[in-house]
Length: 367
Image (cartoon, rainbow, N blue to C red; front, side, top):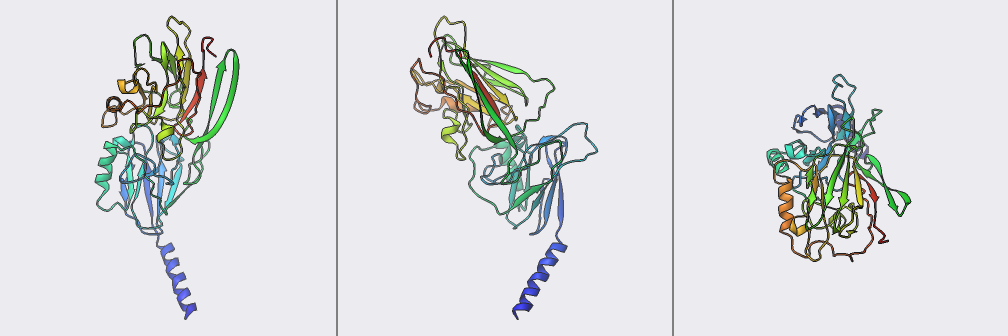
């Protein structure tokens, strides 16, 4: 009897394999997945084929469509040139392990906020999922999934990531103080180093100045390969990475996934100074970057609206104006505590937000 049972189980398994379906999905070409959702059975596969531009297939949740799900799968960025209309195109294949809904988005810039989402077995909730994406929430989910993703390499593009093997870049930091230069290479982080412009640009941002609690300009758009250089003027300011959800707290402090946000450290500049310290970050992907000044003495600079953004969406709930408005609603104690006026700059490098950081600290004899 046991042998008969085992034979039946094996036979059913073979039938499932023979009759398993593959569901082709086009990623990109336009800002959408085609089709936007599929209904699949256990054992089926979903094959994502990447077309023009630079997109991802990243697992999220119904509650937070535009945020990666903890331990979820991620194809990594798959760049495809505009003039590549005949292929070959890179694929990523998802194996359906159960019939629970699987939610997906593109994490390039604001593609998700423009509705570039996908689902497997969404039931009647796909419209709600897409609507939530265009509204976007910032809290990450801790739900895990039994599904897995595999992908096939296509040189010269980097191979797509799986749930346990993300697409990798490295970050370096160079500190120059009193003519002495130190270079450090830090751990890896997910991201894409593929440039989107032939010539990279540097975006100059003035931080502070006489009686000015501002980043000027406060909101920019930057391409992959560009740099952003913060020029610190009078008083004592920082450029510290935060999140849309918590504008006046560092990403390092609020991250649920162990992320370390960039931080220039305090940059004291005396009145009458003509040489100013600078802090430069290099853009490795076009996801939104949020930053603030964490100085709280004599007033909380962030709560005064001293915030900055790169590649924020132009419209929708999570635009720059909404970010600044949230900062101004912060309580006085929300930002990190201040350092003395003669404190040296402190370097922290973000391993997850797609930036390479350079600090040129001209501390004017204060060190």
